View 1 (tube, rainbow, N blue to C red):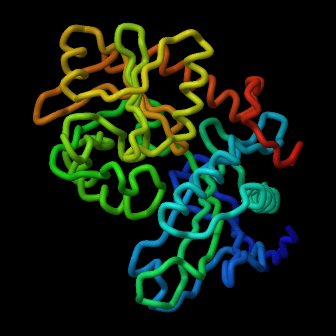
View 2: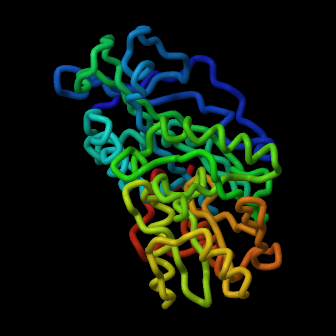
View 3: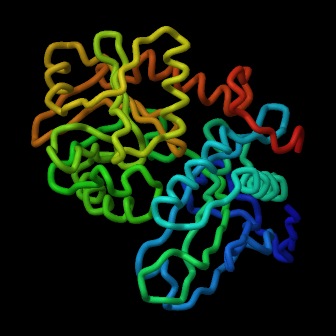
Length: 356
C-alpha cells in the first residue's frame, strides 16, 4: 500500500504527561482512506482536523459505524511497539460484517497503524502508565436515506496520548449491577464494537456515576440474571482458586485483553471456566467467603480491580478493598510485555520503531 503523507504545517506542543487523562488530546496527524465502487482507495496521512460529510450520510441516520481501540507503548530504550494489533483488525472486520460495512485487509490496517505511529512517534508518552491510544473507526458515508448494503465508507485512525482510563488509576473500583437497562441480546450487535452499543449504555453509566460507581455490570437481556460485561471491560472472578468469566454468547464483546489474560492464566496452571454466571452466584460466593478477587479487562484500563459490587441495594466487598494478588500479577505481566519490560513469548508485540 502506498500511503501519501502530508505533514502538518502547524505542529502542536507536546502535552505534559501528568495531565493527559484519557482521549482528550490528539496528535498532529490522522490516517484516512475511502471505499467506493467495491474498493478502498487513496490511503493517506493528513493533518488532524475536522471532516466533511453530507447530512444524508448513512452513519448519521442508521448508526453504520464500528471502531477499535489499541495502544502504542514507549519502551525503556525509546522504541515504540504495538500490542496484538492484528487481533484488533480482525475484530474490526467481524464488527463490520455484522453492520454490512466493507472489510479491510488486516495487513493494510496494520500498515496504516504503523505509519501513523511512526510519523507521530514523539507523541508516545514515556511516563509510567501512559501510552498512545489508537482509535481506528470505519463508517458508512452513502448519501442515501434508503436502507441497503453499504456502498461508500470511510476509514480513519486517530491517536491520543493517554494516561489512566479511570480517575482511580489502579485503585480498586466500585461497580453497580444494572437492573433497568439492557446493553445487548444474543443475535444483536453485542459482540460487535459499534457505537450504538455504547450510546445505549450511556444512560445507565451516568446513573451509576451519580451514585458514586465507576461502571455498570450488565446482565443478559433476556433472563436478566447472568452477568455479561462491564461498560468498558470484560470481567473475571476468582472463586475458590478458579477463574470464572462470562462465556462469549454473542452479546459479549470478545475482548483482546480478555483473551490475553485467559492465555496467561492457563499458562500459570489456573483452572479457567468460561460459562454463564448469575449475579446471585457471585453474591452467594461473596457471602460464603469464596469470592476472592474480581477484575475487569480491557485495552483502556488493561486490568482494573473491583472492590465492591452493588445489586438491587445489596453490597458485597471483595479482597478487603485492595487489589488482589492474581489481579496484580496479571496487570504487571501484561503491562510488562506491553512496555517491553518483560519478554514477549507469545508473539503479541509488533515493533514500530527500534528507537526514537
